[in-house]
Image (cartoon, rainbow, N blue to C red):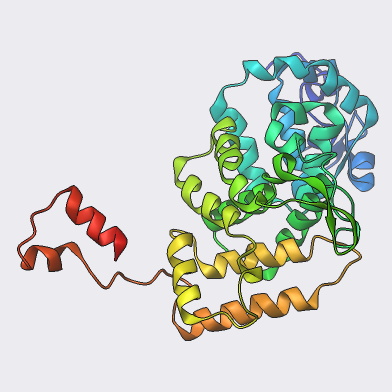
Amino acid sequence: APDPGLDDAAAAARRDFTINAIAADPFTGTLIDPHGGQADLRARVLRHTSAAFAEDPLRVLRGFQLAARFDLTLAPETAALCRSISSSYVELPLERVWGEWEKWAVKAMRPSRGLQVLEETGWLAHFPEVAALRGTPQDPEWHPEGDVFKHTGHCLDALAASAAWRESDAQRRERLMFAVLAHDFGKPTTTVLAEKKGRQRWVSPGHEPAGGEPAMRFLRRIGAPLRLDAPVRTLVVNHLAHFSGQEEPSAAAVRRLARRLEPATIEELAIVMRADADGRPPLVTPDVHARIDALVAKARALELERLAPRPILLGRHLITLGLKPGPAMKDILDAA
């Protein structure tokens, strides 16, 4: 509750970060900044105002999403304080956890900054599907940027910088951001050192389908709404569709892909694939973008870039032929 007896410094010390502890005199406009928030704002640093920060562990996740939204770094002493209260994460209601992840997914300017905050504070351990990416190796020829965690950060930043993501509504931003975050969740369990093209290389066979289940576990872990499950999962398990088959995808292949992706779309898959392709600095991959372009062009020609094909055979057709509704009808429709 408000306490009119507090002086400016004591009142501001109840705020979480110094950049949020700046006030203004309503009569003179003079800024009241007892904790150096203006200097931290200029330096783009998140710093806690006082030891009272530790009273609410949600403030760590607030720092996670603020760092991502405004491209901020965490002060070392604040990271240390966050590490000291890591065990209090279990006290947080799931809906409050989701509230911070939602802001990260919808509003981030540089999403990788948020992941860095989680890593620096030790809070990455509370999200093991993401934590497992750190230290999972990749072939340096194809991934000069480093391990899967670093690659994922670059992919997320590429997504946030794209016009396609910035021009999307909030719900589409969410599903695209979480799909990119989770696109390589299958690599920690599938990555092995194997002989390929005459030398030992790190490969991750089958990591596409293997990513589906950990993506679902992660969404449940952060309290995400169920509406995200289906589109995120289909985008994750199909994120290498541009590498399957021939250079010029066939109409049948594109129809099958559109059906597999539903309720996500080929248009959304292309956005995820472009972010993945751009997450390998300094490697530039115009050939990958050309494959994505070919897929989108074929889907657009078939009017399938934003929807799945309608079934040719429907239940009402079978009823007209005299078949009664039941399991047998479903088997026939699935086969068709």
